[in-house]
Image (cartoon, rainbow, N blue to C red; front, top):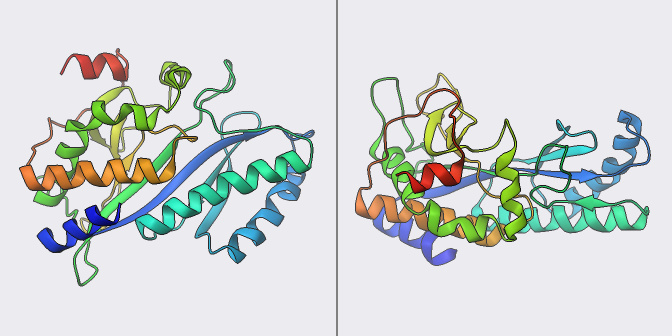
Length: 254
């Protein structure tokens, strides 16, 4: 990871800034806010002591599914934080005699677990290089999108560490269906969240599963960004709407 970060700075004067959303199931005996608070409140205290850059904990769409969202930080700190989050949740669940599950598709009739990585590149003054308006997109953003999509298929084994994880892609909604990018389009592998400020843009990489190795995922993403910047890889046109195919079919049809 570190050599890639150094190359991004030495060759382009840019530093990656990252955050994450990681989903999991905790099978608490009661499905109430009080039960969730009782489980996660001690963890939030522990995470603060362990220097985990926690932003917030949210209830997710699944019956007993939760999402832990981090603050923006460095890639190395984010990788360590995600590993700590998973480990401490699993240990707390085990201590209470309940199951915790981060796998891609743990329950057939419930939503899947994703690890969404948010990324932008900052210059030495801390200014976001991912400038974008409706009519113009910065080279750094375009080439990052292009590199990420060019390397997506090669990195699938990192993002889906177990063949059973690919079942996650069969969910009807909230999973990537297109090997493409789109503004606020959650069906795309790469989403650019909606923000009116042209200098407050980021890429949300929506493909990895929640139990993928965080350091390997972040390294793969940064490698793809560096590839895009070095080779000036142009991305395909923006995707709109809901597709009729899945991510793997989208990759094979490129």
